[in-house]
Length: 73
Image (cartoon, rainbow, N blue to C red; front, side, top):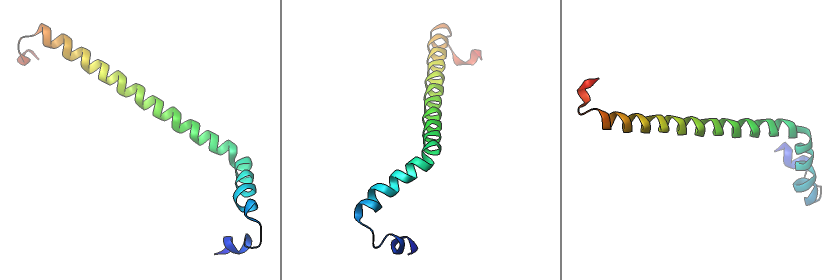
C-alpha cells in the first residue's frame, strides 16, 4: 500500500492526531454540510410520518364513530 509507505517512518501521533485534524480542517465545511443535510432530512421524514399517522388516526376515529358500515364510501 502506498499509504503505509508514506506514513511508515513517522511517529504514531502524526498518523492518528495530525492527519485527521488536517482532514477535518480542510473538509470540515463539507462534512458539516453533509451532516446537517442528513439531520434535516431525518427530521423532515419524522415530521411527515407523524403527520400522516395523525391524519390516519383522525380519519379512522371520526369515520368509525359516525358511519355504521364501510359500504358508505
